[in-house]
Length: 190
Image (cartoon, rainbow, N blue to C red; front, side, top):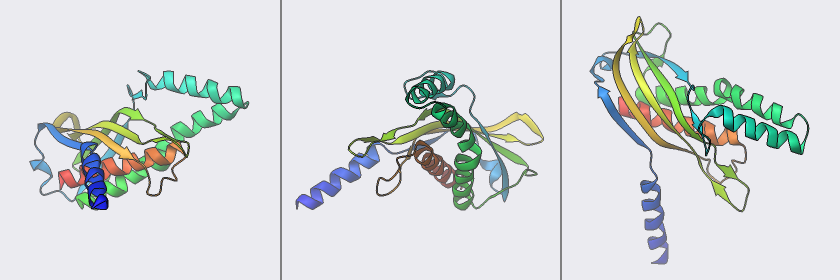
């Protein structure tokens, strides 16, 4: 009986923290006959953790790591930026295309611009952890005329962690947050 109660509590906790995907404006009807879409990413204006801007976060963390070991913070900051193209975007695209059944094609009639609004990098120090998460906004535009916005979709609280809790690397946790966002957004659009 205790196991059933524990599982029920776990299920409701997961549901309470679940990601939310919501159509904010427009319509997705234009995608009904489309088999492909072009996907782009934007990060400008993003807040990170308790910091209002990404620059504030990067400055603080770079200084903190450089104080511990010369050059470590600079390497960390470079990885923070490089992870976007190397880890986050490919995982988002993979999950999105699998769920939506659409291919990512630069020549597609419509473009989906995923803009990250807020990043929570989380942490994992074995005895304590906080999952990573992202909030974003997906804007569907006509590729040939990007000022023609077809729809806007909000993505709130896309969690990032791996099974087993071996996600000590910030980039890995965030990679999984982007995978979750891509998966849920792909299902929503499907």
